[in-house]
Length: 310
Length: 264
Image 1 (cartoon, rainbow over the protein chains, first blue to last red):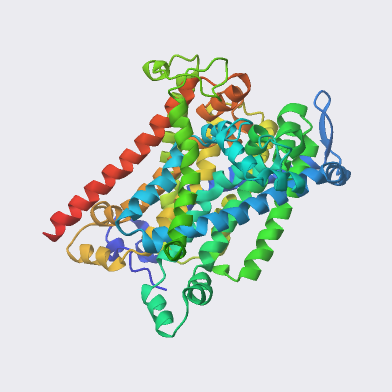
Image 2 (tube, rainbow over the protein chains, first blue to last red):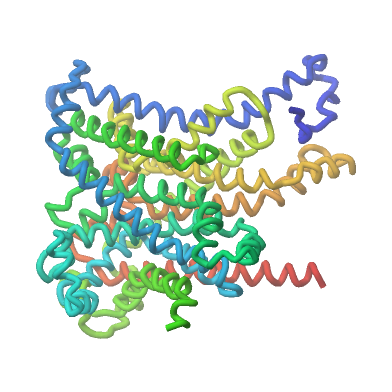
């Protein structure tokens, strides 16, 4: 592969002693471009993971100091103690991701195909909430889901809360401090991460394909099932990943909207690290979370069959 | 009924949009509230007090200005490093390209709490004091991947022949870069910068782990959720939302005008 972008007259400077081999200098250009950024990622992303790995097999205490003792038992202890929070995180994140897909798809479809001249405005309204701090918006859900709020009254009147209470998602006439509130917050917070990739992949679809499907007597739902949805798969895959991964590690929603019964693994890692100061357990837990997420993501990408993502 | 069935997608989409905007509307409405106690969670009565005195809460505006500075520097750092990486990845073929692509993808595919915790162990082990600099380092780190992705997308769709044409017209390498390459890549770089700024400004999890006693705006909001939320928080939230919408709308109008003058 040639590099057509490189200046052809690179050999011109006479004072350069490397004049005979100008291509050697040219070949180094990409490395010089990469160097600062890659060093940054290696030192502040990769190296910390190594440190964390070492921390997870240390024993000791804050007063006496920690030592690497290859104490892998920490992993097992952490897992047996905190598996409910771990399972709960995956469950909440999975439910939120599914809800994001169900809610986000129509909106992405609307923006891509039906919005016309409103398209840019709706896109702005999807992105603009990013600029109001997400903590402020999450706190707003406390008001929306408060015990005597309109939303809860309506859900109550429609007997929705009877069903959800029976399922264990809510408690009596309360929504706040229940699993439903946490999932609602997670869904809300990560919806834009679902909608934007969905919109990008839907927008790329050639409208003539829809016409062709109609010409071949496909009903709207068949067109969707056989043409639109398969073509939007890259968006579905990246959207679900962008939603599920951060949701699984989130602790803000569970902290602000949940109760002690809705703690997620992020809450545990946070309190072990910043309050209990039990670094080995916290490090082990975050590695367990990372491993689970990476395995799930790999399997999912394989199944969904879009390797070009990575 | 037929009308509803035909417009089902539109109705469902607009309902989702309403769901997304509901908290913003609540934030806006409650910025005009005069709460009874320390918490601004239930409506009491209308008041403009908070809007008249947005910095009337101790430490809030300090944290806001800190967050803005932090986001600005993180954006500069991430954009410079990220744009260089993006150009290298799109324009050159070299060994280790695959490995570098994965190194850039991984930070986006990792739960934030894992990155936050591992950075903290690094800083603790190295004996680096937590504060502004550690937060800045962390923010540049996690914004970098997003900038690379945004710029890459734009550079990939650039026609290298434009730069060849510039050189054929005797433009030097610097001139070609400044007058041809950079302007064409600018929208991608701008998108990356905007994303980096928003991500850094809004980040809580990584900051929470690595800030020490430094208080950014999200951390101030987090603390106030325990101590009592001043109405001014809603004012800032509303102002940011309105400002963001106005900025994008203004940008839209400018590009539309340019298009019109270009075609006329």
